[in-house]
Length: 298
Image 1: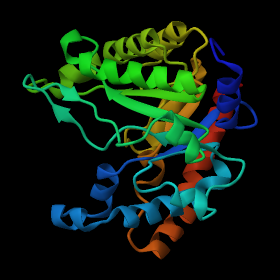
Image 2: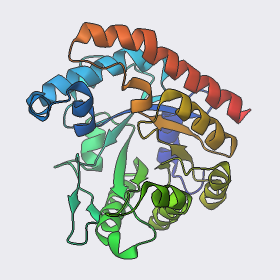
Image 3: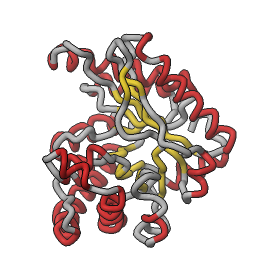
Image 4: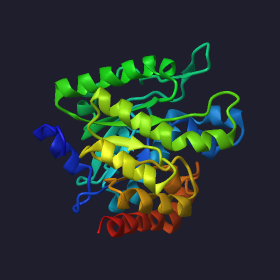
């Protein structure tokens, strides 16, 4: 693993399966999870952080046996998920540093935000194996990225000082007036460009959107040059995500850090409904992802 310290390497090993693949479940969403639990904005606003924490705890509890790691937030999920015993002792824990949502500048570019009072030391205090920072990037618009690159560099430097693993995630986004077709056509270059920016900032583990094609996955793997990279699910349906996992891992991806593609159809404010759906649907999806990762790495 390129440029890992001993401590970072140990952290990376702890978020992997025994075979060395990342099969992590992302549960650090707040606004996105509220929108799945209620369609009405007023009902969404009424869902407390504690309510979300219970939903996240159930996801961890019922999917933990098949996951190598969970990505959780320090606002709703932690420290409760750890202190309740929901997180298995041999499953890694990544702590999300980014705040929910984003600001926009006068040009309409997205400005990432950090959760309050969460840094590398706080991640360690929460029992984290490592942290995760997400920023928005438009690699084709350098003027869009200064604020977010500054956040990224500060987080990377902070975790380096603490010798703690940090996963770098970036998301792309459509510009105002940009058609779906134009954005889809630009996606491979946008993801490849985001990977380059992240690597240039010092990222040692990447969580990236699926770039659209197997050829682009191969390009990313060449660019990464030994830096582990994983793909996120971005809420696509499970069958589509399995195809993306197969494509990315076959071209060198270290695995997945997936959220909604696994649990979006399972969660409810009724905990018994959540338990049943996670048991009947979520765990089977996660087993299929594990199987695809293993087969694609062979």
